[in-house]
Length: 352
Image (cartoon, rainbow, N blue to C red; front, side, top):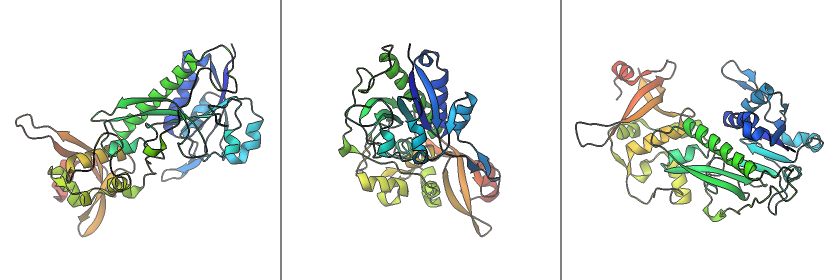
């Protein structure tokens, strides 16, 4: 049986997780051959600035897959000479121009692109760099995965497959990264297995596969996160711990910015209310921003303002009363110090 010869474009951990599944899953290995990988170049990491390969490069090396860790535009001529018919991309983090999108032999659905891309959101919702964080930050109840044909615009191409999952109350961003990556792989696996004709697909794409144009009128964007997105003023944090309500103007900036731009959450909750529960807002923000940029505030210690990072916070229910669950901080890290449990910190500094 002829195998589908593909190239794989990706960089971060979630992409390496997908690649490893692609290389080890017994049912798909007989149909797919990864010919080469393109990823970002090695980068300095950590305080020691140790030059480190991307997670995708590490996985490719582990399985002896050829790696090109250069800007894709710089190796276009080299890519043209390689033996592949389709490109799969996940977390590639480079712009891909039209003349490279058209290189694969397979083309999809009235496009001149042979790139399939996985995006961990329900497109056209949350296009952009942070599609996993934003549904958590905004308190959405569902998210999902879209597999689509890559075109020249960001997360814009027609959709080949899309599936939803529920966001569980205690899901952190790292939890959703794994869940959505695994869901994306199962979707791709079904896509390939369902189109197993025993021959290499034609230029019209995989047999029987159709692509649906996105409803661009419903587009929202999940921009790149910055360190400042994690900042929460100390009075606001205390309001959350006291289970108070917030006005619109008191909301964290990243949420106000999204509401102002799109009027309402594009998923499950309305932002037309006059007040917001501070504890839920802060809890959602913590889940979407941890471990980076994380939720943090500024506290004054001996007259000096220092950064206090929230490491762990949870809702604690009071089973002896009918009162609502209370937001509690469990672990923190003061700038220049090791992380400690919250009681130890507050006993020492009495800030809360």
